[in-house]
Length: 150
Image (cartoon, rainbow, N blue to C red):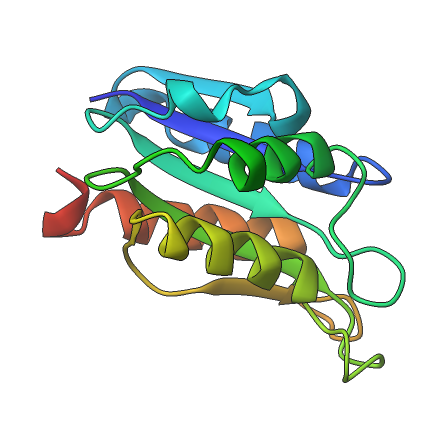
């Protein structure tokens, strides 16, 4: 099984967190990191585990690098039955109505196309004091050890 870490970012935070997760998971097997804008939805393999890190932009929108991926998913509507993913959303609860909504848009579409979310919905709140990379790394390590991840 390959662990594919995918990220959607506006300012680079999700990319940095994805790289930190990859570094923490190197002893678990093959790990790759890719920007969602460079990812073909048709290439989401049922044999892989997809860890997605996605920020929120503006009034709760997807970040720019996630938009092409989501647009292609929405237009092609591939059957994602059997595709497993876990998500870690970034946001700021100071903006309560849009907090972590970018990742929620992605979850709704993946679920609608038949993908299966595993593990806890990871989130980082920029209004808090927790380190995003530490939270995301702990979340990822817990996720890859779940029986549903294997």
